[in-house]
Image (cartoon, rainbow, N blue to C red):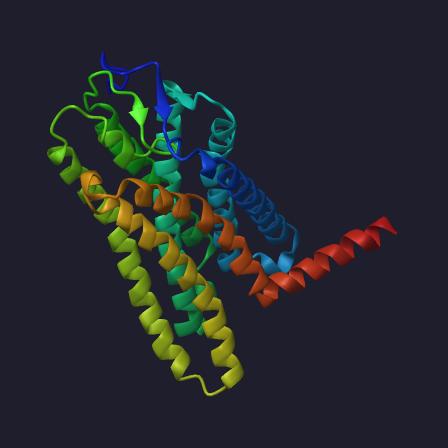
Length: 313
């Protein structure tokens, strides 16, 4: 893969909202707060799921991996964005752009597949509760997790190689906050339609198929929950699954908007805001949704805190 071809500059200029300097300060504050909440929230979930034995279940195993993904996902872009906002010259090296593109694509695709796996886990828990332990055994969990990670990185390498091999004729001004496929394709001085068709195919596999499976799973879940006689049981089931659907809708909705239409048809500023949403807002909301609205997480937090203070005494 000849990524560093003769038309590749040594660095890219990330324009972002440089034409709107009045947005720099509020954007910096928003990014800093969101990133802080994302890091603290996801690290807290990871530690609780590791330290509390009652959370050593498939659901929280996948939730721990989702937290790891979100933490790495935002770290691949947000710190550099914060630094660039404070600099007059907003640049990124060619190698840094390649690394950012590969990591961001890989983790985003892996999260799409992981959310589908989590929906299947909830389907088995609600619709086949007596078979849950047998179906969601340790080896199945490890295999589907490995499949998600390998598929995500394979998709990233394919999409990155197609994008970075396009001739740019010396163009180096990326009208975005970070290196992303739609923004980099706009730099090309050749016809991008064949590449866009191939990228569209990969995006369908990574975005539309998982979200379709998710909605099918939750269709069965909703049907099963409605048959529960206990109002408390229905409330608990809908509460757990409802939080997952909020994450799915936010993440997939914005991702589909960006990747399942030609880059040329995407509004310049609206595309940037949408990418900020699935690249920053959704990873921030995940720990809030899964912890503040989750009774098991709240009880685990109390147990871990009590254990820490008890041992200190």
